Image 1 (spheres, rainbow, N blue to C red):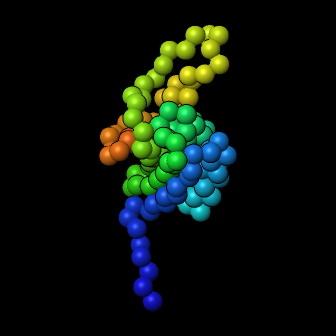
Image 2: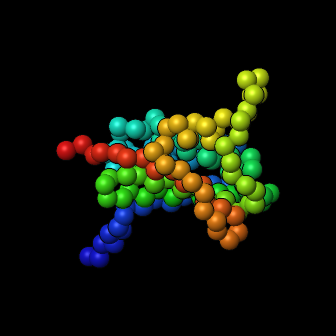
Length: 137
């Protein structure tokens, strides 16, 4: 029997441009975290996935396209979450006013993740965040 072992362990899923995809992406990540026995920062990871998926839908996914979520568990251990989209645009942390109802997603990611950033891809971009995590003994 051949068994393919991925190093680092990875999961990837594609989601269509639909507001329900944020919930589906969060469930995909929740399942992976449970399978990998990562529970310590689960709520932080899930909130960041929600914010990055929402940003991809609102700002990074052209009509008729979708976005991908990639999870990778690296030595250390740390979890890397990537959201891939095919749209243009610049990713930046806004300075919303106190009255604004929008614009706080990346502020949350900045506060909750250990690191985050943006990388180019063709077409589009990858917005990622990382979380130090420990697995139960």
